[in-house]
Image (cartoon, rainbow over all chains, first blue to last red; front, side, top):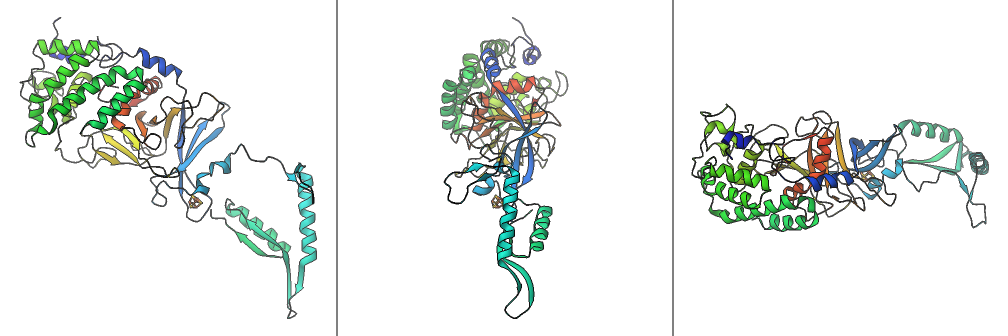
Length: 191
Length: 282
Ligand code: SF4
């Protein structure tokens, strides 16, 4: 077989060496490829909503067959000068803030003295909350302090806001609670 | 110097029968590289490699390469096309089309690869296998995504392992030309610099109702390549194989990358092109 140097060096994927550029047998690799279920996930930047450190996250998402975007995983962003890929245990579970199979999707109620939780409607739960808040407020509302100053405050109820509150949610919660006369307000919102 | 490469290639040859031929040749090349060991001179190393390493690479390829490649190399040697004694000089293009290694007669192959010229797969393979033992003294480049030591293109990407599972390791790139490693943004394309359109292609679970686990952390239970994935850019359609040392701390990135042939084939099917083919042409 006479080949010139140029011809020899030009042998490529479509040349005499077959499927691989250097003539490796790809039969088995093709079989393996057909067995693999490879998913593609898009990477996006995000920020942990839990605390003031503000760690950077990388979110892995994919478009589901129904057109919805599914969140697959969240990890620390190694490029961030703030957290350099690190997340605290809370931030590392931030995926569950968005999706969790163990999330309780309906209100549960355990009556005083009962041992079991039972599923109740939202109407029941909200009505019960409203009644309890009113009862506590009525019982502990203070109109004047010890020096006779008008204070109109509720000392028997406190409010704790979640870290994942947005600014708007925090504003709304504060307005509502101040409206009820609450003075004990704590808020961990950082976003 | 190549003990880890040898051990890992031997292990992967057993684990991945589809890549047995690739690792068989790789192990033969490791023997060759070890045989020249620390005899590489500091001056004129490229010319030295052409005379002392290239013939051994050819020998190893003829003995352990896939049959067609081995035959092609034997024929070429028989016809004097890769004469070991050919002088390795910079490409001057007297005999062939300009811009190809053949343009420099028999000796310009290594310099052509170093100059980033367009080479055929076999030229590339021979040059890379020969230069694996040669410390390169090319001027550093400052182009984003290129090797800061020699300006070469990245061959692969890997994530460093951390002691803590809550820490995502840094993304490192390894140069195809001089094997230098450097830290690079995890969400930027090294080829075109695009920052917002990275996609990771990884095996999803196929049993037990598991969710696909394409990020870091624990891999899908039945994954064949738990520590390997492909990272592509939707703008330039380029990709690199990524080796996650967090999932397999024993991996040797440039060896493990050779096992990813089925992932490479999957990527080719979907219209992606690897930024640089690896030593074995994948
Ligand atoms: S990961 Fe932890 S430390 Fe970082 S912002 Fe979230 S809660 Fe704060």
